[in-house]
Length: 123
Image: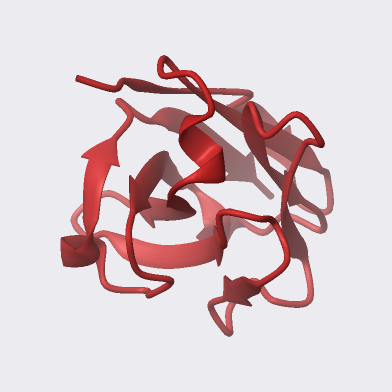
């Protein structure tokens, strides 16, 4: 069973930046799957943030982050990262890395999930 592991969360202030990273336990895993980032704020449903195709060419973002966040994959396709700029308190959530077969914002289409990393943005 492939495992995904997120890192990079933390506590920052409004306007700061953070980079989240996701690695997989399987060899060449990201080169065969769509990988996305989702987040879940307290008492809210899990929501789509961004996703990237297996070859790193196609990306998709939610409207709330598309001008501030960037998803990318390293050349070795071992890490999928989420660069988050101009963070706002509304970005506070647990961020999850997930992989599946469709480049979609529907969490139900993702089969593999990490445990999440917490991001707190204070004003």
